[in-house]
Length: 239
Image (tube, rainbow, N blue to C red):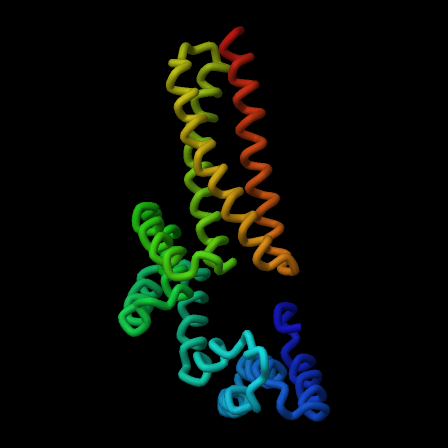
């Protein structure tokens, strides 16, 4: 319901769940998010605190880290940064993420956001450096694996675009260097294969989350397209 921008309905369902089970930490957490979306900040903080103070569950609640972060205002700060990135206010997002990184230098969620920002700015080297740190800290985290997948797909697409330009030149009857075209295809295939690897690991780690399966399909399609382009490339050069 929150993803559908229906926070009022989410609030009602969460309150009903809490009436049945007052110690249900996840319901309190979602209630806090719904209230925050409704701009009822003070009530949201009470809900987050209630979630954090709920009787501990065994095994530990998987949302506990997020609950603790919300209580400290961490989630709100990260949400603001995400909105800035989506709004293309990259300079302000960069300033804010630098401050959060100083406080949480080993929090992979923060590093992932910094890497995504670097990629938006076109700094692939910096994005790869940050994701390398994040993968070291949380090698099995599906969100980290997904960020790595997107980075590899971006690099593969860059080489694919260069291939396309050369193919257009060849189709227009001009001579091109066949070796250069093959080198570009090889350069595009390597990150595409890595993207499939990362996306596969993410989908296996969280099989019920649709976006990981979506990106796995996108990665596989990218790799298959490169194979098809390679065959078309050979036919074009033989003409």
